[in-house]
Length: 560
Image (spheres, rainbow, N blue to C red):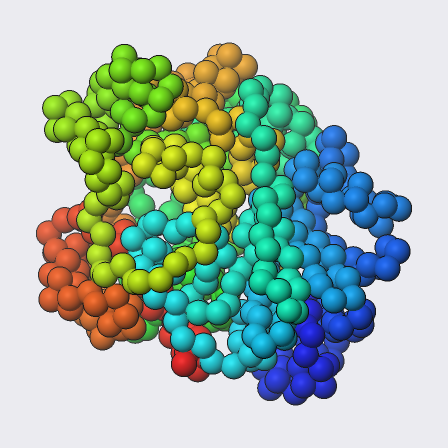
């Protein structure tokens, strides 16, 4: 953990002593100008001229690992961080102001609050709230989260508490408004995905004794496995076989690993996700509802089964690679309003081609799809349908810098929203428990999709067309042209069936429904339907509401 504040050190230590006493006792203290820093051991700190720098992470520049302490000039260091690939967090502490820079790849969640000229920054929400005291909930954040329409501009569950957006820099001055600036956002460019992925894996894992690829047998993990086995012959494909999911693709995964000549291992997870619960309590608090996984036995650990899998094989056996993020980055599910993007790219012909291909890809009737797109383009119809709750009044934070790259009504905007959603939900590199990298989320991979028109990212027959072509050219494997398996809803249906009464109590009597004026009868009806008849389009909203409720309950004492 790290805490940086303008408040008196003794006051901070007294506020933290009850729940964070161990950190207070063990933390290193640095004082510079008007600010006191409490640092855990993982944070490097040093003076560069008259500036105190604090750094943690692992960033590559020119595919060589950066050594920030070797820089003699602050400007050069910060410019290199603009182009860096990987994960890092930097605090630039001057005598009267602080600049915090976050990599686009999720690393440390940095939260801050500013009141009456006092600044408090922390990497843990609970510690921040212990210092500043209870706060009201942020109804707009709650509404956006429930409806999958987050703008990722720094709003959090608590009013007056903000997060440094991924890939941005925030400057905090005691007597001026916070200032945000895009920092680690890659410029759009053409990318040879195979070569860039090879460079990334070589940079992060090339010297490892063994590389373990979390391998489902799907397109994204097949791409990572193919490139990883080019980097080292000491590569293992590891498949997680869930006893909750009878639709496992273990035989397909075994076949693809055989095509690539890679050793294949199967681990059967003992974790049951759909079993009845007595509560949805957390083993430990988390700092964002994006880290709540409602189906996990411990909802505060999004990667419960994933971590169990790593423990089963031994965390010291090698470096872990995953295919996480490919569905977001390369667009497994394009938004239906693709006509506007096709028109911007290639005129009316482009619009019609995009709609025709989308109609065939998703088996969606063409004429209703055309009507929906016309209403959306001409009348400014809402991009998302089926929203729940009343949109709260007031101005939100400006959207994330990445979202300014596309018009809000475009399918490209929805694509970039999805990329940010994936980045916020991935397991962060915030400790040293396991050595893991999700290479499809790295900045130089994202550079190849940020500027790509959505209508060029799928065809009438295939989604994620960019990496399918790249994998087919490089591997000649049939895995590149496997059709995407439709997601199974059986696990979610069983979860609702086994926890119907508990979910109704949680959501109908909860803070989300009352804050957003969501009708309790609507909630009961939708839960009943998803528990007894079928999985509906509302299931994502219900799960998001559950995530918010669980998160709110875990921080209930800090809610004003």
